[in-house]
Image (cartoon, rainbow, N blue to C red; front, side, top):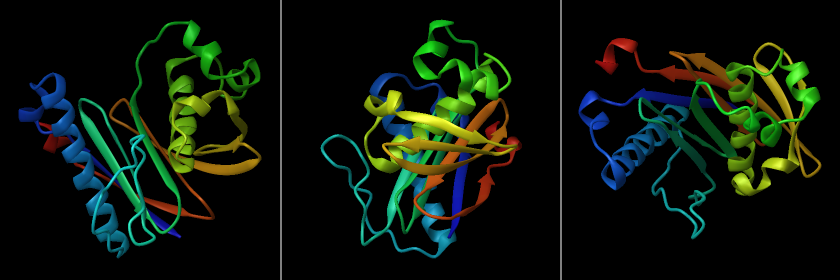
Length: 193
């Protein structure tokens, strides 16, 4: 299966908003990215409804996922459970490493650095979105193996391949049930203004 991950820069006009207004604007932009992903993959996605817990509800057998941050949004649609996450690489509290990964994870990832942290965090969050559980499953999602652009994660006995893309100080991670390749569509940096 070929996934079309769509990542878009947040227009400067939307960055000045705050609170709920900002969340609604980012959510709308991320939903546009999901629709673009479906279009590129030749999938018909009529609605983007959510469950009561906020998890995306599949529509006509098409699953979808989104992520948004102040500068970028991401979305994906697929004919199988799918998850995408996006994070800015930034310094964080030392305690976050212990809450997110095991000592062997940090060793495999080359040490406790912000880049290593967000590679693991985005992989875990993509898997948890694909299974529809959310962050409450964080401790049960474990790194099994990795190579240059792939992390293999285990969650409740199932293995998930997670592919990542690093750009503009951010890391995006994507996973889906089954075998998949990814085409990353990232907005040109000039579009950010």
